[in-house]
Image (cartoon, rainbow, N blue to C red; front, side, top):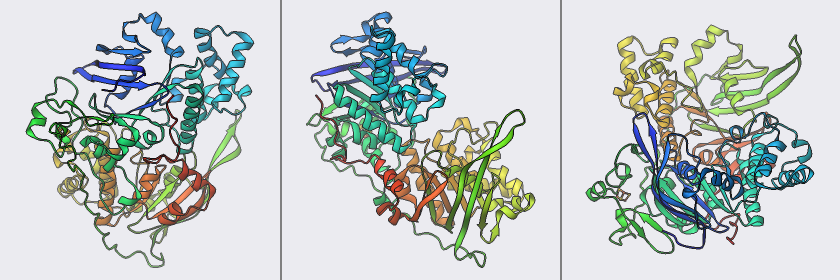
Length: 625
Ligand code: SF4
């Protein structure tokens, strides 16, 4: 692999984790080098071993983890040979670290100033007013507004973006040579993500530090990285300079990752999916780890581990396809066209073709104070929202966290009391219905939530989960007919009928989301409110769910109100788009209009903040020093 003037050289790193069922070979012979002043991205989906690699470098593994072999040289010094006391000096002083969740990485009972001061106390000679001046300088450098008053605030008083800025200030307090950033913006909104990425690039330029960036997001890689290494099942399967990687991804897995990303150009196509699952890393694996999911697997792939092949221009790949120099081979993924939508049945007279018309919707939450909990004001979470969704079409409701999107979704399906406005669904004002009348209509509109882990009852079998709504709403006939219908629905969402006797914990995230979709479909709804249904999923699993939603829409004429902050999903899926900001709709129209010619400043800011995959990037990466 790469040999260059590097600040960090990792050679043949092996890290195993001891779990109940055996030893997980989480990092299996990983080698790479990070150049001075360079951003090196380690890219991969969840469970591929990228975070374990970072934790091994910093020697911060959980108790169950053990580094078996390898070297980790920082400026030529092997960190794996240092005693723990020396390693404590390295962390913070020479290696800074930021993690995904600033909320959990910060100490909740220490002020911002005290947390940064602690690092200075440990690694520098700065004390008293000199230390405070340095803390203020750091808070100013990371762009925290009003640093003087922030100094005495606690993490709970800060927003997510501000917390991540404090984390960056802590990581950079001692001007480390290397910053390890593990999914630093994954938990943040897209505009805050853009600010944090800009900040990192700016600080990198000023301080000349190197960044090991760990991410699953190809857009972030495209914006930030000079060099990319793709990890799959504990191994690096491809390594290349950024431009070369985005122009010519060589490994079949990398190509599938690109092909499974939704975008505007693919609107009438299905997305490529990576079938099957990542292999269990418990025990020895023979042959290529991607073989079970690869369209090009040959008998050789299942028998022999692929070697590392250098394909020129600092680009390497671990795949048998490149062994006979046939790497010009066309491994482009095929996609099918999405079927034309089915003709939808007639709507109630007077609905003007709109299945759902929301008019001046208001949801206010009371603010209470004092012992008597008197109402002293209201939070206007949704303040006068009007929307229309046509039968068999998709309206995307976009905006950042806290904008009120989820509250709109819950208000529409009457899971929250409305403070005002009307929700007209197929000729009926839902807000005017009594509880029993509403129950009778519930089969027509369903909701799918973001987190497939918490939205399914862990004590119920899949059969009971899917059947529950049918029984409650009197859909599906007698027990036998219902059971047959459950089998059919599971088939529709791509799950086998034999899976109905299993419990949720036996399924992957993508499969659980399919169960949630099956539960919604079981009552044959006309409208599904999808609240960020793919945001907790990897891009390859997201592709499966998006394909499924589009397929169901074209076959069953279901309308979707798709709540999301992911603009590429919107580009791929939406017919109409409504943009929400602070409880109000600031722009709405056809997807082509809103995305192609945004009028409102907020829409423009939102679209500009989305990291794009460009070979020549809109924000050119900092030239490595
Ligand atoms: Fe596919 Fe074989 Fe290459 Fe593995 S070695 S990625 S199975 S072609």
